[in-house]
Length: 317
Image (tube, rainbow, N blue to C red; front, side, top):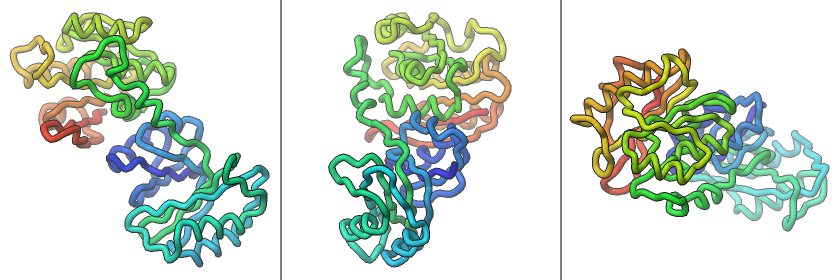
């Protein structure tokens, strides 16, 4: 199905890359992406998207063009519906949001219900184009805020927030029922997301305090204390790896230097990863020069956290 994605806006490149875990992106514009998705229900796993829609059509970004498109589509809603319009910068449409929504409501056959609609039609104006969709799913990003690490049984400063942890897992393209490894599991953020997604996972950490805290946060999880440079797993046994490498500031790294830790850990990740699997590794430094001899680098993204920290995200195949 050809779907229209209204992106969250925090990191457009990362949002588009994340959609790759459910389909094939065909086009992008400011704030949106189009993709062919064989199983639309799988899009509910996304973290960097606000709304997922069935794409009904597109036209020039004017009121007249949208009016003509709606007349051509001749839509009939079999349930109470509402119409919503969003103008994404640099949209230059020649009408107000309210005027456009009223026009849409009059152009679609059926009963309008602004208070309790069962169907929503959404027009997105961006880059001098208009994209019209019927809403399939809205991502409940509030659930990520509810899972704030400070609410967990064990908390440690500097941990990755749930939205980003979910994104990292999604970038591996791991599927429900498959097996993911986090060799620096820390307080268990990645593992908590895999549990919610139906993905099997195993976490390990060198720091016994972190591992004990991880067990508190996810009592039914699978864990082992292990050095990430000598992991106790067979070759080619994991479908995916997602991990936030230690930054050496407030964690026990168990190695003489970060460069040695990163290099030897990447070798081990390469060893335990199945052929065709993906690994997503995150750190505060650009380590592409360490990874390129072991993997194909299929993605590199940066996410600013605060003034003194920018996360570097590597997708490795």
